[in-house]
Length: 307
Length: 308
Image (cartoon, rainbow over all chains, first blue to last red; front, side):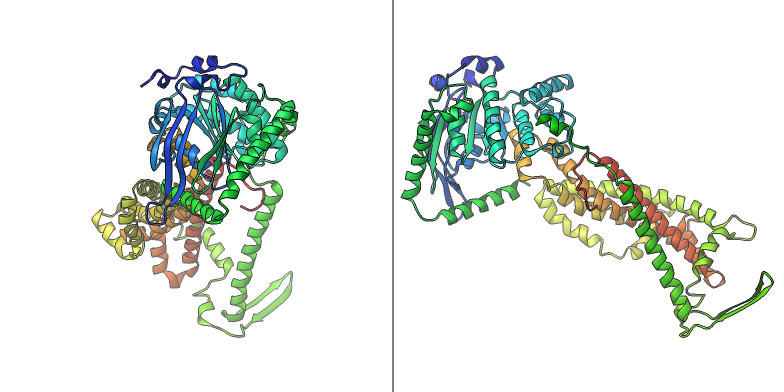
């Protein structure tokens, strides 16, 4: 194991301060994906969801994966989290195989749905990973109240999830993912189910949290403005099979604020991402529905297999 | 925005007074309909009767001849409701305690047997469900037998169990458990798998072991499913206890009373009817207790405002 395998909470907080987006990539990347391919369905008629993916994500980066539906961006995220395994290639997190990293609890996960447990209070939901990791009660309590402050939900600790709005629930899910101070945060369209206004506010919230924690984030979205606003790097993907079409560095100044969305450079970058998406879209005009259906099928089979 | 959300009204946890009154009224209406149908049948098909008396010095003479007398509605087959209700107050034996008091004692005995059967059967049912959920092989191999176990006529095997376990309340509890475990296993099979696929993934992302997943995700998710089946099981456990008591020869319990009053039916049909009603009340009370436990255990969960 390399030194990156032993997480020290202070280390990644100290490496990058304001504006350090790509500077840290020279050291061991947090995520290294090499020659990864994924085929769903092993029998005849398997669907190639991902092909030849190479990607390195450095310490403290905020990387968005964007692409049309069915391009395998969620699959790629799940590969990093070892929630599914690649057909070819290797995925490394913190310099070790993705499976080892999962077992070492190196990452926190946020889904499109908050996936909170209705029988637990907000605080108890945030403490769930801490319970599983054997934290003492006092420490759990300290962590959960700290995180409730971070996501600005202090005072709601003894509420139940169904007493909160959608945006608040998603903030609880983010707090839960950050509860054990993971080096990596994986987010799968976390704000996809929220309305536009809540979404923009949540984007600002996330930027504030990220500025404070400097956790490395991999973020799946299909919203171009969201990807550009949040990221230090946007990975544009093309479908059938999913490939990396273009990696665009987002050189907008940190910290990102409401004004960021009004800058000339912001619009240029949005246009650049949009054009990268369109170019790849036009080159392969058929089979979109078939791909979607196949992926939905694969998703269903996987879900049944888990249960 | 945060302040506004904080003043959200806390969801009402139990039925409000208005709703409770409606439920009580519905119950009363159902009882009233039952009484009307019962006594209506007596009026049309029952035995003829005649009242010949004086009231405040006035002579009263009413005679009723049912238009279509039928065997099934005769007083021997279908006593008048007031006779059945009155039977509770009358002594069961000469100079003995009222039948109602006697039946209450018998019901308490049967309840304890049913409760033990319910506890053992419920636990067994849950453990089977947990086993099946963790092993597809075991599920495929054994679930058909679990289903088959319930197609075996319990009436036929209860004497076997009684003989094999030398009678007594233990054999009764075993028969009660036999009827109890099945609905719980079936509900557990469903409930333990009912959590969102993403919740399982979340647990996987925390590298949670099978035991943690069971304890922190599967079991809490299955609680509403389990309680639905436990209500069925509570009623079944009372039936099981009664069936078990019949061949056991134990003098206590409602089963013994059923046998006894069945034997002396012609000399007092209302006593058997009273015992049957006592059995139903016991079953209802047990189901009610389970429902109460459910409300207490799920009071922190989301409950839609309308509906159950």
